[in-house]
Image (cartoon, rainbow, N blue to C red; front, side):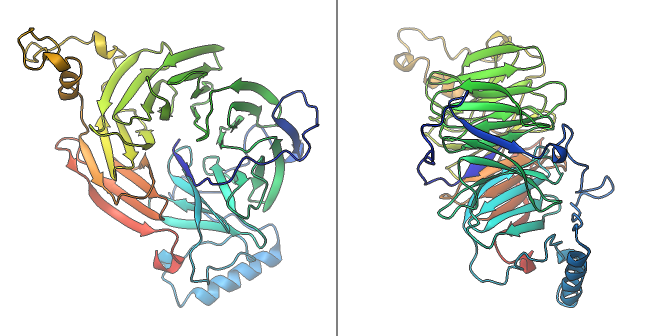
Length: 451
């Protein structure tokens, strides 16, 4: 799942370095068992008849009355399509002109929503149609460096961030938005780099370790050592009964694939350079990887670790920000610092490795050349470049901002989020390809009246 975080702080200091614990990095775990279940609380968001997330009702009748009064006062000033449910009457109504600083962006597991962490709190948005659902603005501090949603329910994982964090950056806070408070926490000796959620698991990523917890009681189930992982790279499948997790291995260019259902571990040397980004298909069957070079993206079978396909983003080096499979794994989207989002067609359903696929008789063998060939001195470089698979659709963005990408719920649509507050929803033609068509654009950091 794609995420972006703005990080400038040094690792969080250990307040008690002499504390002796069974695990080197885990400091403490606290929770309210009655509040956390193996199955998350009932969905409080979108019903099956509506794609919109509905407001979670306040637990206090007084709060409900105040909220209703606030909505009544706004009725004459906003159209019904622009009304945004504010779940907490104590939350500021965005009257200040200055926009918050964005610290984090991430999609939820089905890419129907996204979360934004700011230096004032966090916000939740719906993707299609675009709409701010609710926000939490904290009075003191307020910086949230990581916001991880659990599909569309009221449970989130929060980590403090920015210059004035709401919580210590070495703690994962389990937030219940029905109760408007934290109901559990996981504390570590170093800064948390990323959090991933499943219905049954919580995965916490540190600089060189990953911890897997049971959701119901926050019991530690597994811990993994990795190579230095400052970006918090980690991907998990979301299909129930088939838990697959991918993380960096212990050497440069290596990824580790954990199949928890079959208790199998697979190591794949995916690239010669360091791993920059990777993504899993929803069922955990396919893995897309990119290195710090950023020219090629490789698709692997996670069970056997075989290379199935290789696509080319471009010829110049680039920093890959995000990779995303479509729900059916027919398409792959890629965003980078070059300011272009690419969509590639995947041909991996057969499971036949790329090197084993038969070559068409009409396709020249560019890799073979005679000694007299003018291209023989760069054999294996230029031929591979010309025979690469290129993207079928593209969308141009402004360079200079970081973007993450996911496929929308409508057919052949792509959602793009920028750390500058930009939201794009685009559509591509799977037959003709080329430039995508922009369907929507918003700046989600601007006052909500502009949506």
